[in-house]
Length: 116
Image (cartoon, rainbow, N blue to C red; front, side, top):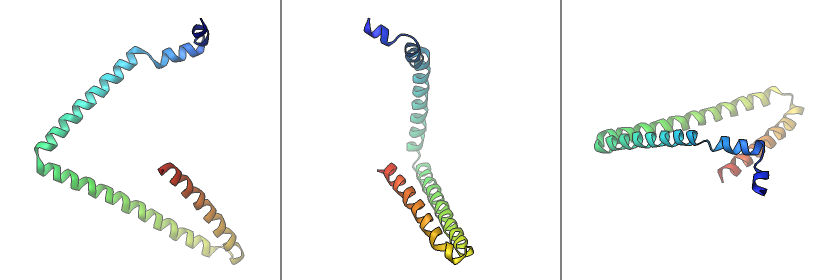
């Protein structure tokens, strides 16, 4: 009785909505098909060492290019920040530098927390 009262009304409807058998079956079927396709692709790659090596090199090149792109964006941002600092009147440069440093400290702290 207590459980029925707890699950009455909208809570019960939400739980039923979350646990719809047809949705669970469709999701499971999709996962099984994906696993089969992944297995087939992996088998074909493993059967051809030349293709496997080429794919490995391609992936390494891709991630290296992404890293270089991110590095270039950081350098461009740094240059833009320096330009902005030089455009400011001298009396505002120190205040602006502190503001930017505080912003980066906060962002880096959040980034490190998410990474750990």
